Image (cartoon, rainbow, N blue to C red; front, side):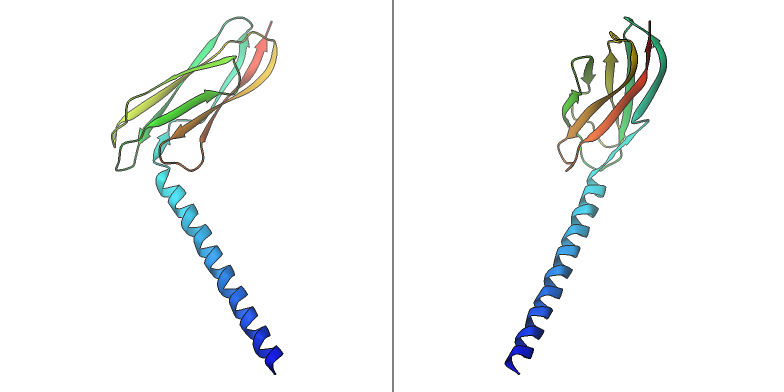
Length: 136
């Protein structure tokens, strides 16, 4: 009889623990979605074919759709072949910001480069992508 009671208590505790874990995970996901307050004009740019040795530049624009200031804390290209510049000031709600990326096109062939954007209040970074083909 004692074994059945102990087994019942163990099962109940396992159920409660799983339920709490699921609710915590859902709450964390809801927080991530609500904090992701930058609306981008695009997050991937297709250059198509470009000429070798002629750098290409794209400007990614975004709008702060949240109700607090947004601050870009880090903007990093995936390699030295991609340079970036970005809005360094706080972006007020409703205002726009931008990230400019330049790919140097030094080597022939297909390319796919990323830019990792971190803000003060997102738990995972935003990834911007540049793709195309460099021709001789």
